[in-house]
Image (cartoon, rainbow, N blue to C red; front, side, top):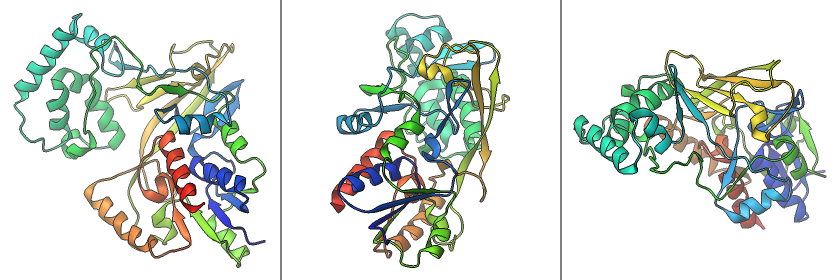
Length: 365
């Protein structure tokens, strides 16, 4: 049968659209080229621990409707993201807060911290920042930049901070309280049972075909679909006719360790450029696990090329202009809607993905 909607991609955006459309009485078919659902929020159970296979994902939002919608498909625990940063043999709290500043400068009060940052910013004497380094120095001064921003950022992007555009860091929030809560959103947590179960519940009674890409499906379904919701790479959809858009990729090394507690926290950032990984994730701490062993993942930034998984769009002037050309082609496809981070060439937090899907389906219905 010709479905009303073909959804290409069983990640969060596609799953939300599928659930809403199915509930509205529409016929829906979901396909995904991967052998599993849930896209990059896919979790799998190892040693009784829900492992975030494609990197740490922490759900947080200020949007009550989004929180309530997600809560239909999973119960969320009360996990609060409080990562730490390691620089040499020094350990700092994140985000930049009074615990960070006290460790850096052996001070106690917000007034002292503000004064040090102000003096360091003034000493740089930067007018209009010409690059990311100058932008960061003009926001937080030399100490925070050198120990907690520079190396991590250069690893992420594979380039020196002086060779990166200033707009990548629009702000570096400094919180002058002793609060290690990374996010300020009122609703935060991790779905109990993992994100795969969350998406699985969203896709209940929706036909899903895995290990199937769009071209393969079209070849065996000449009748097509009423509308296609495409969440893959927009440049791939058009055969890279203008050339590929740029991304940063990631590489993961995951191992089970015969110890109960490896690092004492879910996420540790390593901010020296000489350390090849950007962070180590200990998955059990997302769910307050007490298993006798643990699973850790080292996350390495990686140069992207076709064939690798695209994670972060490189939204510089060159690539945004290239995306605009693909967007113009997309606007000429009346029965295809492009969504998600790959379809729209934008990085989205999970709550923004759900919000975009909710709004899009409301518009159709």
